[in-house]
Length: 291
Ligand SMILES: NC(=O)c1ccc[n+]([C@@H]2O[C@H](COP(=O)([O-])OP(=O)(O)OC[C@H]3O[C@@H](n4cnc5c(N)ncnc54)[C@H](OP(=O)(O)O)[C@@H]3O)[C@@H](O)[C@H]2O)c1
Image (cartoon, rainbow, N blue to C red; front, side, top):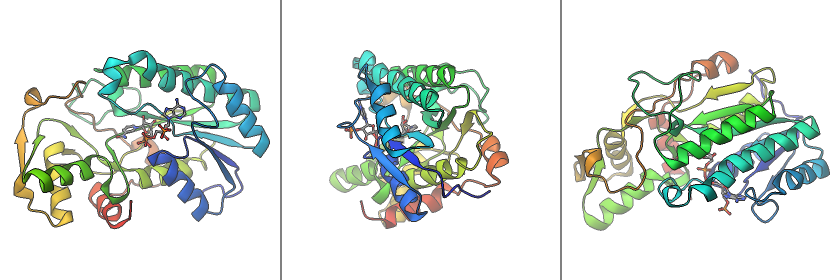
């Protein structure tokens, strides 16, 4: 599977963690790109589709990638309407702009559309049943995006971490260093995934114009949050025994997470011919990068 170096790509949400990795990937591949941030397009505003269309036209974009989202999972519990405006309204705006332009569009979604009752990796067509407000708004985004743009592609992913371990790894290291211990749930399972590998996967999927609907991408390997935290410590040269297991019932987070949300990536591999890299290798690369 080869990428498509001549495609002109508009990255929506170019200043987010995924957005920045997409931009780095496009630069490295010498592909023509432009990015939008909140100051160009407010994804929650009624004129979002029009603004996206204008940005895309001024650059003659062939494809739009939506990396913008309300990603504060716990905060969404208190303001679901605001999260919905970005995660569903914004997704629909991307689809609407792409439809008017005759462009392709990729949109990013989440494992939190599932309720976590399965004990095998979730496939694209498994029943969705989000447990929290964030998951509901992202599911509404998938539905509105695909309804508006039949040729659109939704890429679900999970448990993202970024440069210098930003996200969960950095948070664990901070807690361990500050308090000398961390308590992490050992009954929540998933597939940690790096923003950089997700960005590379999205760029690879540009070479699959026939693929539409939903596809899953995650790094390889299913672990509990507790195991992930211990591996983070091991790789960072911190004693992993400082991480202690606790049950989800004792966690003080506002939003309920699925107990098991590993995603099956068979469809991704069939389309691209690529196996996702192992999450431990992805973590090693992320920790080695500056923030
Ligand atoms: N992080 C995870 O663990 C995870 C897991 C599964 C799926 N995902 C999905 O992966 C995708 C990328 O997430 P990420 O980790 O890169 O998130 P991120 O770092 O939080 O980036 C989100 C971007 O969206 C922008 N944004 C938010 N509200 C906006 C608005 N009203 N108008 C315009 N821009 C707005 C943010 O801009 P500001 O900086 O200006 O706020 C930010 O640049 C999202 O679709 C997310 O749902 C994430």
